[in-house]
Length: 380
Image 1 (cartoon, rainbow, N blue to C red):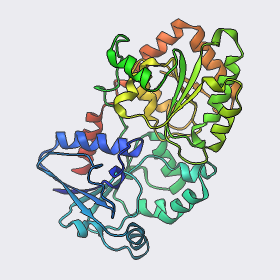
Image 2 (image 1 turned 135 degrees about the vertical axis):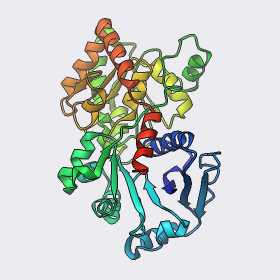
Image 3 (image 1 turned 180 degrees about the vertical axis):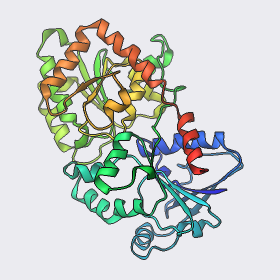
Image 4 (image 1 turned 45 degrees about the horizontal axis):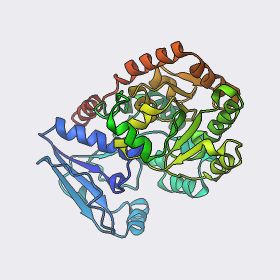
């Protein structure tokens, strides 16, 4: 079988979220399957070949085009041309790891992954430009043309059934995962622990957030919780580290941090390469992830695999993926978040219980299993 895969999300050199999912899924899928032929589609007038992963399997081939991107997308959206399966030629199945402009022949089997539909549920967390992009791309219409939809969580599946009125039988839940060779407990005497600490100028004791800086992540609440904790003498040495690229509507986060009486102990780090992330997780005290909504929430599992206790939002997919292994808080209730951090910092016994539960929980999620389930779906 010839399987076409849209890898336009892998054209940037920095991976997080959807690119992280796509890279890990494909890496494990190609290691698992040497029978089917994989043709990886991308389009860019800019040279992006150096950014694309170097998959060396004989049954994997890149098919790149250099059409003007805006014109190409408009043609796909309004003229439904060109059909990508015909452009690549000889495709039996086409897989999209995320929403994008697309046109496919009716006789080509179609599979797509939906990570969440937060743009429909919570448009207030997005900019006007992003909301217009989602309206232009018309996710509900795109999904209606696909034979099979994959979701990361049962929560997102339920959202699709309730919001778009899709039949549950059309949707398969295949959870995301983490690379356990990278995310693990690291001995504090490890040489690179000290190197990473110096590289990012990390404080001795810190709370940690990792993710895109944008409203849905509720980072302002993290800063406000930190401010309240710092009023207590026993937390004088505590710092806050916020890591992640600037997304959108992030100005308020930096303003609140700037106005904090403890601003010197609030540290911002931009993008962290995957080879450094596990060391920072191992150095932190607690991961704070009180999002208003998550389709999955990979940092939660990454942190747990590194032995870091997690505080996250009591909503969307987060209770599902943590399954009793994290402290869940109401993201709209600041007192709830403050109390949760205090509880962990003041109770070594509870902290160790969360570490143990988190380690056990994170072991359930492997990219090998994600790839096996995805391949099984392709070959049905």
